[in-house]
Length: 282
Image (tube, rainbow, N blue to C red; front, side, top):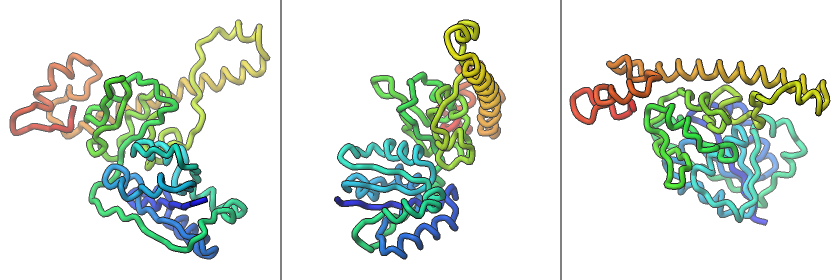
């Protein structure tokens, strides 16, 4: 089997520490295990995805980097058809702690190649977990900068990643399914670390107690209540982050929640003509 190992260094975001990357490289080289070092997968995918074709051309590809869910969604964003490739994803820090698993990573070759990322642009943008996305359009409607669009079937797409404002994850907080991932963010609820979504439950607690185990119902109720509070807090933070991104605009109503205000002021805030044109605002 043609197996290849790919190590993402996250050099334009530091999501994977330099110490971890160096230790991982040393472990592989001590075993004479070849690998491909990707300087920054988040940057390469929108700018030079052709440099990553070996991932889909292998019988089995092992991807090591930040969060497995985030890396999988990144490759989905690259529109890589990996249906003929067996894919495995590992968090670099956790992999270093598992000597048994590390010992099984063999490629049958000792060559080391590097995929460079030379762009000035810092790769900060969202990717979508389509296993969770319901195409509710809340991310697209919440974002003011034209990052999202939809295809003829109504599927939400990230079409303009470079429009995204650096360090702004507001749309991810607005997503009810937690389907929006910013791989370089530090919060687990946003960077893809969380694998399970806990949502508020609106069913009658009395009905549940009559038909299910009371302790299990009450436990789930506490989780649901905590999730509801968390979501409310996330939406408040999202609004603050969105307003911060619009702080440089002249129109105070540009980021207003009132849709009519946005529509009426769009020509002033993000006009198609004039010296104050700001095409990124809306």
